[in-house]
Length: 89
Image (tube, rainbow, N blue to C red; front, side, top):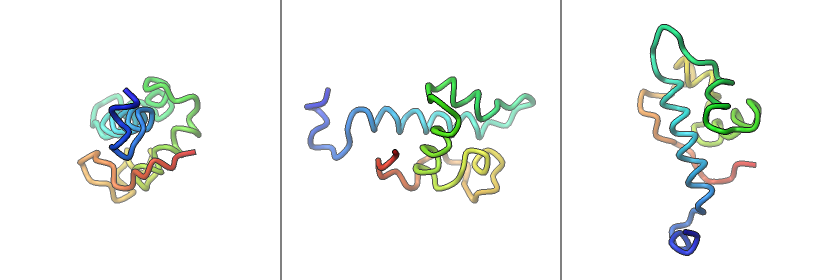
């Protein structure tokens, strides 16, 4: 797998993390009677803590998960990342 990604400019682990954050973004945007908590979404997608998830999410989307979920951060309906640079710590 790693050899396949050598020329892509992204590592396998970064791509997996990006896909997980994108799935979280879609889940947080869902409008339903019982919306999941941010902590529940983070746990479901394997983030070790809500703080780690929030930092990772903000690095990708430029807004916090709460801002994303409520729409107050200026995020549109499309959960495509706007600032993914792979520099999440």
